Image 1: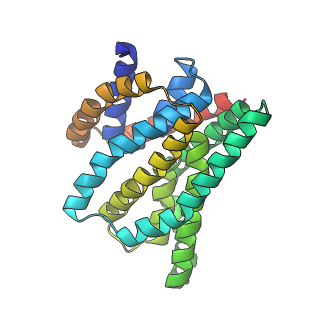
Image 2: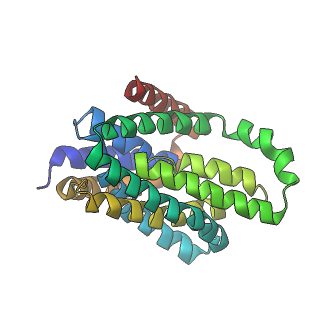
Length: 257
């Protein structure tokens, strides 16, 4: 059933995503766990399918605009798809035999949120630190590093639904400093679609997706993302990003401790 409160939460998250460009996983999943009391694995599974649907539209826009570097998408997928499948198998196995699965997911989510906050605040410093080392990398090493990044994101997103946005973009900016940012953004969004879809379907197979919640969130978030994107030029990113990063760090710390 549709719950107007969840739709309102989706609207709020959609506005923030439109304003800042940060993926909804880092915002939506903690809200579902801490504010609405959903089981962590249900929050993660539902948010993954939610992300795959919303980012499909973004991929279509970037694809039509020619701002997707499909070579990068393929490299990321070569790492993320098998890593996602393996992580889901481990989760399914652990869920049947151990009682600590919920704690593992909660801690993984908390660590991912703190890492996302650091990536948001220190992106330029991180890029500057690795700039000289990346210049010495051969194209083959860059390709392998991109595959490894995909694998890391596959594990992280499957466990927490967080990581494909701010973390993935930060590393891509380091590995491909000469590529236009809009092409990296488009590539990151395009890669997030199969990643979140596969992970979301895996969680669905484990019975950890609430479709009533999913529909309620989409009803609010889709118009929220549109409005937030239209108004983003009127709001200073220098104000929004530090506030959002601080919020993620606090929430991540609360989930861990």
